[in-house]
Image (tube, rainbow over the protein chains, first blue to last red):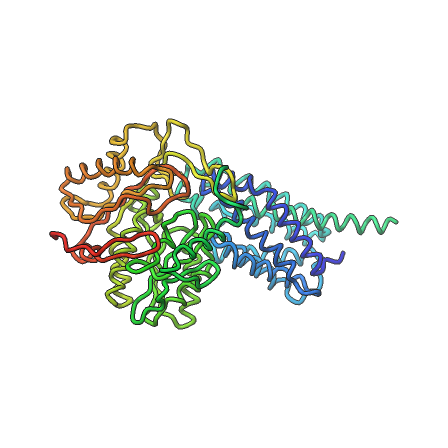
Length: 223
Length: 337
């Protein structure tokens, strides 16, 4: 595999498309307990990310892609999600700094872990507060197991995406302690968290893109 | 969805362009999503910077002008502005006398205004923040720091704005803004939902015969849903919530009845009539009053009642003239305080 800057940009472009495809669903989840704009904020951010990718220089590293995504979220989004994703993408950029390719499962474990830590530090939430962290964290733990087991990258990312989506569904049982939904307390139980869902969509999207890449390589190898 | 818009994702940009053109005798653009009074920075005057999500006009940009705010940052619909436009707003109006950020208590606003404050301070500007939390429905009084900021900002901005116009110090303006906020309580009632343009669908659903007391200005659920009732009964219940939270009996107050965007002014006056009667019954003197749309939630139907318990200083400050983009009043002679 050769996940270089160009490939990371292609992955992020697809992530942006997948998030926009799920805009209405994310708004629906948010509308049940919050103000119904999570899908809109994420779409605004991801559209800005796609525009920023078009402005990248002719040759760039994976970290440059993450850095420009961070800037896009910083300038265009606002709300809580803007600074959180700005921090997450900036941390991803730092974790990938100077690397020409991100071909190893451990590269992506480091990136996910850095994003998670940045979100947790800025947002101040704890696990179990019914936030992004509650789907992201189990996905990272799954990546850690995959690294220990020397799983191949596409398998590790795919499993992490599945774990994240299942964990997002499990946020239904949690009582929110952060964000607008927190003022609802027990009334929010039974509703799936929108932020936990959007990060799961992102992780699944990354996994699908990398798996496609893997398939292409296998295909060429067989020939 | 039927709205007077083009691409929903362009609405805020196009609104900001129109807003600035329509108010070019009062404000100037100081960033893509930020405005300031034409005269900014005003020598020796503490500057007040406001801001928040779009969808609430006249809040927040509508209150930029003399007697209220010096600058404002626009966010996306129902989303706090990022730090950048807040910083642009602050830098444009700081004369060196300092800046006060006054905004509502929401996670996104707190995060972005805090980041803007940190950046401005690093650049050598004196910046303080006052976070408004007047919505009694959003948390119990024992947990008041978690309450949202809603309609009470009309009084907080005027009191702080009038104080700043006297060339008071940064500390004095911050103190009275806090004092105004601490003496202000608001409760709202929602009758119908609103549609975030880029979402395209109603944020939530209320049955034809249902209302929600305590509904937030972004459609966040409130205290409870109930069957619609004659307005006097609804207002009695809402007024009781305010009275239970702050002792207004035999006090002088500022009272505003705020329409959320989809309720006719006629109904707001029906509400005012009932609140006035309840004030009379509790020995409350209405020293200042306003009925209209001050903090809206797009086309949501409903209203909120804000009452600020006044001391002599706040009452006198509210006599000052205001000439902002969307709220104007003439100098008032001192009332019988």
